[in-house]
Amino acid sequence: MQKEVIIPRLGSSDESDEVRILRWLKETGARVKKGEGLLEVETDKVNVEIEAPDEGLLKEIKAQAGDTVKFSAVVAIIEKD
Image (tube, rainbow, N blue to C red; front, side, top):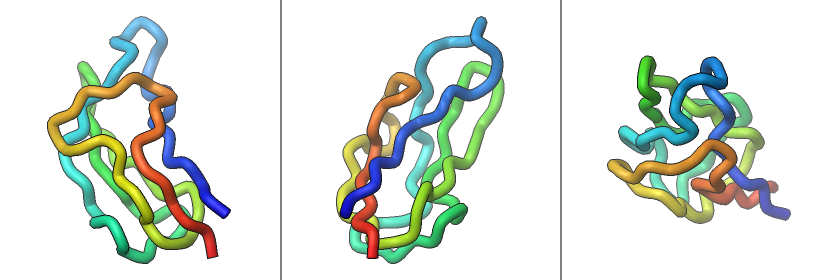
C-alpha cells in the first residue's frame, strides 16, 4: 500500500499558493517513521519542515530541491509496511 506525501496549506490564505523545496532530509530508499522530517520548504514568509505522513520506505521523490510546487502537490510516495 502506498501513501502520498502532499504539501499542506501553510500560513494564511493571503500568501502565495506555492512553496519552493529547499532540501530533502531523506533519500529515495530510506526508511521513514510517521512524524519524522522528510523535506524543508520555503514560503513567502517562513521555512517549514514537512513530516512523513506514515511509516515505510521512501519509494519515490517526485519534486527536487529548487522546484516550486503548489499546495496539495504530491511530492513523494511512501511504500507502507
